[in-house]
Length: 384
Image 1 (tube, rainbow, N blue to C red):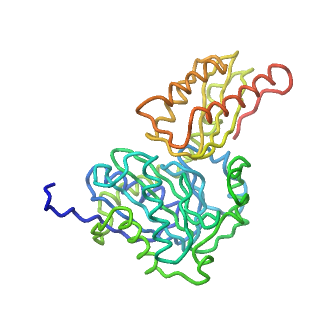
Image 2: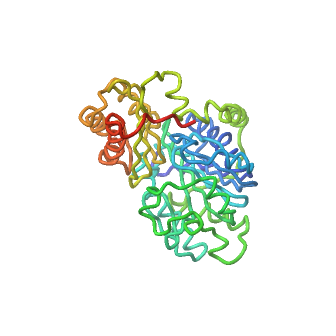
Image 3: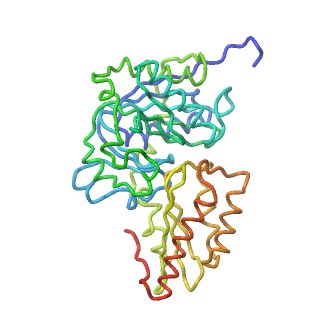
């Protein structure tokens, strides 16, 4: 581009879906179309028409949700293709989703850069547009006095930054949400508020009044222009290819095999033998909660699962980490060396996760193994 060229406008799409359906149809479809250069850089504002939950791509729903409660109470749950943690989104809340090639000026190319670069401006737009004392809280939240107003998920794949910003606008039933998403103690140990009821807040509560769709549209545009400059936003719609992609994903991402892909029953069940042991460790890193489990046979790791709500880049790097445990002695020396070497790789980014956090989860799993060997406990059973 020469010095006088005018940047092409970004497409600005406004729609209505529930959060779970959007995350498993429209969102991956737009992301794919932008990556394939079939669609321009896109800013999408979705105002939810129903309540729902999604869990992150690196999470086991059995670990982070009370699935029997969700089924009994007709709570819609999906597993999305983006990282991050379980999120409950209510009717009337809004999703600002950015699908931006990282070769565009000002678009961050790493997770570590993306969160502060974008969320600081999201908080600024809330302060300026609504007069709220909103502040960015590393790594990936926007809060008001410790109460979470904005949740996010992020991925950088195929040369595209997909940054999804969920603004709580209206009240949800926090009793239902808290039961559906029981919070691990480690998850809130560094938080001012320790339960969902006190930690959650929403825009209309903070303002003491209703919020219009026009205000949400203005906030979305203010976020983009604050973060990326005076970008031209051209109103648009999804293209035919994106609609076809969305139908494809809507079918694939509601499948039970996809939903339970990161569960122990799925990963360990087909290969387990009598005498095998499953041991687990859990640790909170600044980026999120880490769940590590090992399937151990006669002192050797057969398979590992590393789940959690942080934001790895690339997403498949979690597979690399898991695969590297197979065949290792179930010892701190062997498994710890693998963790250190993995996080030192230049092609891997676990922003907000350091070796010490994975090693702490490993130590807890190995302690469980040692207790089992000494007769202090029996072999762990699978989570189903």
